[in-house]
Image (cartoon, rainbow, N blue to C red; front, side, top):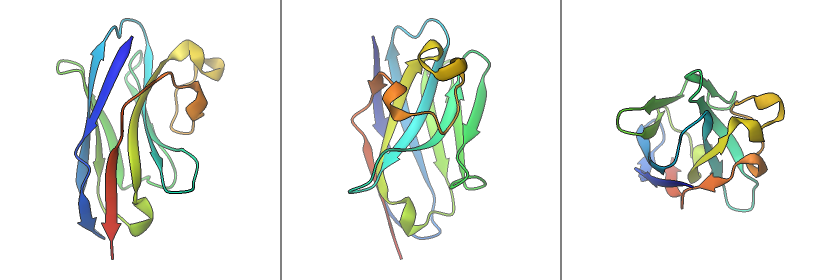
Length: 131
């Protein structure tokens, strides 16, 4: 079992920055794909960024490339999402998620991986960006 807890969501103006944090706990032995998803009201989950613990590889979606950065601190068991240049369309509930790499097609951890493949989820943290 893996437990995830997000924090850091807030209301900011367009152009601002936020850093989301995800505390990871439980049994994370083996290779995991950690990811940030977001969900705006009435919309489906959208993968934003991913981090593969086995190879320490990261990926971000095209919609946030150049603005968002995912990072992982293995010593603290923390996952971060640094968000710069925030836009109103970034407004959403942001979730930290995890799954073993074997749960993904071809064991491929990437930002666009299907949300249904992720087994463990945090409760979410709200990000609101105003004009």
